[in-house]
Length: 284
Figure 1 (tube, rainbow, N blue to C red):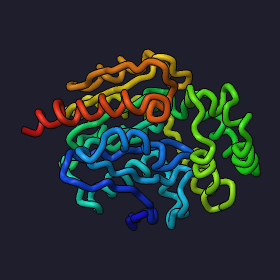
Figure 2 (tube, rainbow, N blue to C red):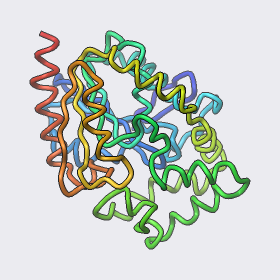
Figure 3 (cartoon, one colour):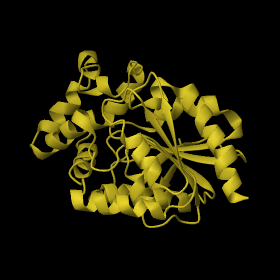
């Protein structure tokens, strides 16, 4: 797997290559780039998919500057990644983690052509629901983050209501989740990064100010929301789409938050349509 050295540290990524429109696909806490594996397969060779593993607990390389592993810091890291890989006319796609909104709230860079927000944190829902708040709570108590990560070894915990059982409607393959959780289970430096991030949620006033600035992003935005989502309030989908001058909402059936796991084919079709029509038209 290729890697790139950034200010905070070195991150791994996958890149399908090719000359098609570029999607940069971003995951949430305690996951890695494999969240997008089925969507990437569905999109096929006509779309270039770059999937970084962000330092959110599922990463294998501890960050050199852990103090930068915050919502703002990881958002800045995404912007730095675009520059380091010289990616242009990019459509950013975020699922679960909503921090990419910080990157675009103050005006998009020349490299960003569109944005797709897929069942992600928004408004005051940082961290999202009971699972997100549980990680934040465990980060505040010495030793509890280690305990929380060890519990992820057990299938009953992974599917428990109020925990990962509310993240995906259908079970994520055990071998995929094993890879997601193993770094934070084994490496205290990875838990250090995760703890820093979990404790970095901006105060409510800052979240409101960031949300108000999203209207400055005048490029195409696709908001994809799961009708049955238990972590991201359903009303946040239309509210989020309405914030953007060129926002559009699509609602997905038979899915929870992890739409890339529950409905990869439908999500891939929506993303392909978005980049080949709305984003392409805006660039022409």
